[in-house]
Length: 216
Ligand SMILES: N[C@@H](CCC(=O)N[C@@H](CS)C(=O)NCC(=O)O)C(=O)O
Image 1 (spheres, protein in one colour):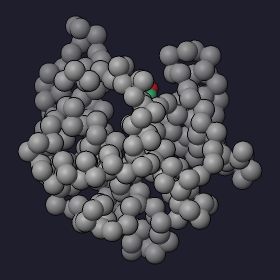
Image 2 (tube, protein in one colour; image 1 turned 120 degrees about the horizontal axis):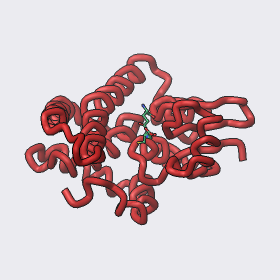
Image 3 (cartoon, protein in one colour; image 1 turned 135 degrees about the vertical axis):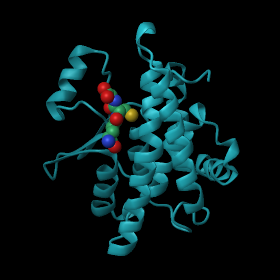
């Protein structure tokens, strides 16, 4: 099999890539990486020195693609069944990429900041920084909520923007509840019912005990 995905089932950014792979029913070899194991980390670093997943390797094409958005873009370009995730039309493509960037930058990354703060040693906590990150997530919700154009982020078609939205909203909801943003809550519920997403969530379930915010 030509495609290999370096990933971890609990990793939020990996979910973006997995949803795209499952949407297109793309055949690939899942290569789960244990970053806590020095040998496995070193093996992954040999592929991508930053050791951040997801990373897609296409052996047949001699390509190594890091960054979740680019993984989805590569799939949309090379796999006919995934093409609708990022159509070739330049204006449509730019609108979808913009949504993807806004979700990652203003919800997903501030949420990661909250998790990172929680994982600091007891004497290294930064309540001020954590408060700022929560405020940033709230601002991100305000930004994204009015942009949900239909059943999916861009309207009737399920795209890269939805692959990005699910992990961001699913995880950020643990840190900053979506209850005050009913359209986003409803959108998240629609996403969760999508078969590709349901599969990702089921596969992550055994690992969820390791998610630091699972108890609030
Ligand atoms: N911008 C990257 C972010 C990737 C990322 O932060 N991945 C996390 C998991 S969700 C990771 O690899 N964390 C391990 C680490 O930072 O050591 C993308 O979109 O793929």
